[in-house]
Structures are given as structure tokens and as C-alpha cells.
Image (cartoon, rainbow, N blue to C red; front, side, top):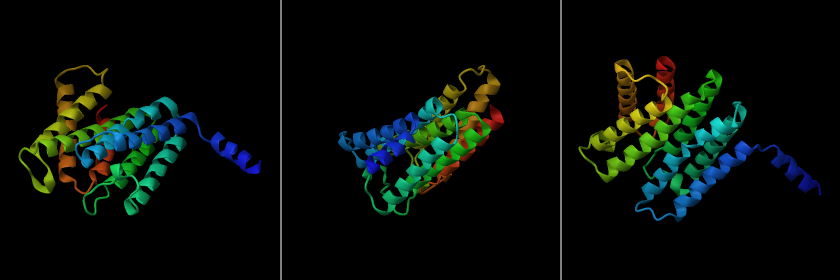
Length: 222
């Protein structure tokens, strides 16, 4: 009876948002294993891209920093363990010495700290979606259609994809902004700068730089 009471107490500490968060990531991991991806890398990018949608759960369920910080730190611990002892292959990079999945979790921690401290969750939404969709789709397009390869396996097709997706995300987040020449230049500059940051990064470090600089650009311009 004592053990059952302890279990109920522990479950009572889990809010709906925490349960939804862990359930969502678990569903992604399961789908990445059972869906017939043509390449193992596509399975990893599937999780990489769609896990960025977790920020919408943040907006819906969390009005304080503690719960999302607990979740992101939990993801970091899981990724560190998975790096040493691969359990979830779909989130483990195949490149040697790449800490991308660990940096990805750190990137989310950075976004949580900045967004909830400033009090604007759109900061995190921008960084999260760029880190997930722009980076993930750029990698898929870049490897599927490797037009003009640069250093570190970067491609022109991947860079163009990253730029275009980032511009779409920025417009989505600043949907109420009036469209004029200054705003168009703003979108181009932000998208170009983040594309250059991603281009110059290697071994997954862009998963830290993109959240930091996207937050800086958002706070300076929006």
C-alpha cells in the first residue's frame, strides 16, 4: 500500500503539460521506428523536425519556467545517455564525434531560459522552428539533391532551403506585422544571417548557435 501511495504522489506531481510533452516525444520515437523511411537519416530528421513542435505545447500548457526546464533537462539527460549507450537510434547521429543531439537539447534549454525570462514565448517559437524545420529540411534537401557541395558537406541546395524555410517561419511568427520594404529587408537579413550561422557551424553546434542568434535577432527587431 505504501508503494502505491508513493506512485500516486509521484504521478500527482506530473502536470498535464508534462505528460503531453513526454507522450508526444515518445510517439515520435515510436513512429520513427515503424514508418518505412528510405534512409536511417530520414528517420532521425523526422524526430528532429517534428520535436520542434513541442514549443506549441509550451505555449499551450506552461506559464512558468520550471516545467519546461524540467522537460528539456530530462531530454538532455536522455540524449547524453543515448550518446554513450545508443538506445534510440533515430535520435543518434551517425557522424563521428558529433554531439548534435546533445546540443539540440541544450538549444531548447537556452530557448526556455531566454523566453520565460523575457516573458515572450515567440522568441522560443522562432528558434525552435528554425532549429527543427529549417535545419532538418535543409539537411534532407541537401543530401537528396546535393547541388554544389561546399566544405563540411554543406550544399547550395541545402542553404537555399534553410533560407527559404527560415523566411517562412519568420513571417508566420510576425504575421501581424505590416508588409513594407523595411519588413521585407528584415526578413531577408534575419534569414540570411541564420543561414550563414548554420553554414559555418559543424558537428551539430548550430543547434546552440541558432537558438541564441534567433533570440537576439527577434529581440532586436520585433
